[in-house]
Amino acid sequence: MLDHILSILIFFPAIAAVFGFMIQKDSMRAYGVSVAAIEFGLALWLWFAFDGNVSGMQFMENLPLVPAYGINYTLGVDGISLFIVVLAAFFTMIGIASLTDTPNVKNMIITLLFLQMTMAGVFVALDAIVFYVFWELSLVPMLYIIGAWGGPLRIYASVKFFLYTFAGSLVMLVGMLFMAYFYYQATGVWSFAILDWYRLILPESFQLWLFAAFFIGFAIKVPMFPFHTWLPYAHGQAPTIGSVILAAILLKMGTYAFIRFSLPLFPDASAAFMVPIAVLAIIMIIYTAMVAYAQKDVKQVVAYSSISHMGVIILGTFALNVEGISGSIFLMIAHGVVSGALFLLVGVIYDRRHTKLMSEFGGLAHVMPRYATIFGIMLMASVGMPLTINFVGEFLSLLGFYQQSHILTLLAGTAIIVGAIYMLAAYKKMFFGEVTKEENKNLPDVSKRELVALIPLSIITIWLGVYPKPILEPINNSVEAVVQLMHNKSQSELAKERIPDLTKEKVLVIKKTVIEEEVH
Image (cartoon, rainbow, N blue to C red; front, side, top):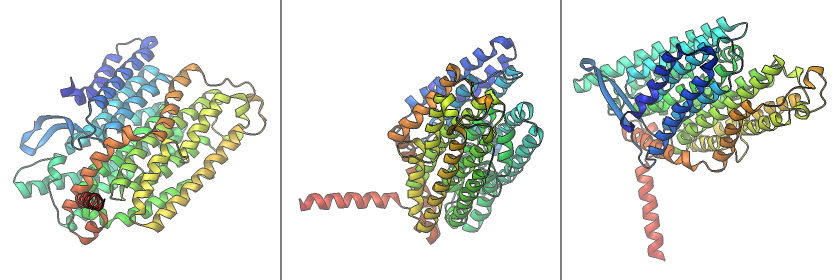
């Protein structure tokens, strides 16, 4: 089975979703949890079978689809994509298990299983067309989730989400077609294989235009400023499970794609655009943090804080060195865990009070102590408290970019302080003080079903904050290979200056060690 584990991870939930139409409504929740648990078990098996010391692709599969044009069903996983695949399976399982009395719960679970297929496909696809197909298919289940189970403005939010991301994807597709054409010009053979494209060294002028085409598609998906306006509507109108999957997994498609496509394909353009993108990321961090502070709806606070943290991920990605890129990938996982948990927590209180306005709460720590404790843990992780999962990713991302620009890193660091201000202010409004609203005096604390979803997330938040090595080491090995590839392909002096040569650094360390031994 390991030879086809990636295909099983992709198509098992989709096949189960089709069979789900034949399952009775009363049994659907148990069926969905069982399918998602099997999928998560398969993802864990993939992790345990993965060799963390190997930097290249593993468990590769290849099947010709349109051989004349070099379109193949090519899959593979490395340290960059492995843990996002595991995270997607984990949150699908958690999401289905935490579903409340949702109308048409059967359709919701079937939709989530189809969404799981597209998420797995995006992160393991190594053919650009196959990647694009899964990338676009992921829009349909989320469009349906927001449009069918969302709030009063759900149709507007779902259409805006679809149009923004679909328009960006079309520009990205044009870039992919040009890449295949350039490969054909260079070799006489058509290929959409990403690993084949890595062998191309394009003129810097071509790189700039192609980088821009891919950038538009990826930046809208992240979403980066100024393309971010669809996300607050999507989060605000989506049901809890929709916000959880959107924040935890779907936003990571854009940042993952930057590392898989933009950096290794266009190293000179990446170096040239590094500072402008960093400025956009810092605006994204500061601006959305300030907007979050002004919100009255706790779900919008979490939504805008999610955008702010995605800015730190972008900053780490475009540090163009191992520390920054590894930190950004780790922060993708951390952001998924923490933001997903925060949206689940917002859903818990919304189920009880049917309001998300912070003014409607106050003193909840007296009434719901377990809920207040878990919310506090996740809040501390969100603001980057040491010994929590976000701290590791943010520290490495900023450390990586510090090597490129001290001033820009300082600005990004001060913006994180603003994040602490608005999150602590929100916590104070909701949990401290006296219980002033009569409706809040007898609210039930988190139930056993809710604890099943929230306790594992709390454990992961602390565990990976204290001991990140099991995840960080495989990520680091794959990132080193990407950075060395970027340096080897770079042509401009600017790129050679900004992208380190890891081979030389290792040689220097070895020589220094030999000299010290000779002295002793």
